Length: 301
View 1 (cartoon, helix red, strand yellow):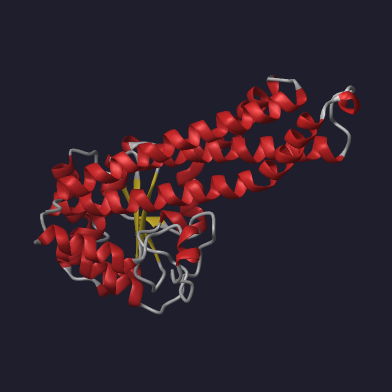
View 2 (view 1 turned 120 degrees about the vertical axis):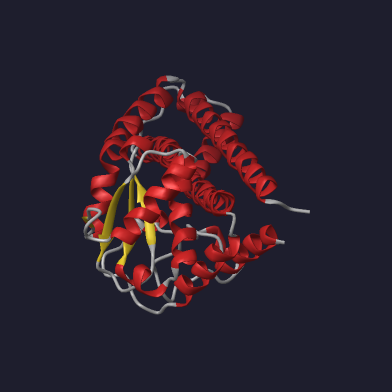
């Protein structure tokens, strides 16, 4: 029978498997392009640029996300009940108290950001505070604290770096192929090398899409893990399950959200674009709510 612990362990194993696959995927792509052009520096230069770009996002991701969400900080006197709830759950989770922010959106939702547990932020919407009862709000806050405790921000940064490497390598390869960047002895290369070049072009076109799909898959796995961790923290999976149902059924639009920050929220903030077919699931930042609720209710048995 599935338990909170087995769900968490299973999601951790799946996530690290995806990261391992991602690493092998990039190494294989870099080897292919380097072999075609006879220059192993392609991979190293691309990785350096991607890491530099992603490093900026890592250090300033919290400020960017909060500004885009229109969130503002609160003190204990502003909302004592919310402050005490976050404080108590942080103590139970063994985490420093994160900064607490509120956005004025009517849609019930929440997110966590920050580069590590000592620079973490939990943000909730006015709609969340208005619609959820104490047990449901506790489940949501526990979910966001679990993202902090599970180091999901760091993991997502690593994945962003890897996706950036794939995109840059693919872009360079296509530019060299289209604008005559191949080696001078290309005309003398055999049929096998020409086939390899054609395969490289196809790989360059498809690699960014595949990398993005892997990134989204990891994001979905981390949501399942945060759900399981939150259930372990509160010992009440039903509270988070009910909260997810209320959040997903609320029709209120989100005022300040875009594709770059949508993955941060506990549930997709885009209304009318919920996951439907299996094909749409591949490009979703979040698992279907019904799957998450089912997993949580199984933990409660």
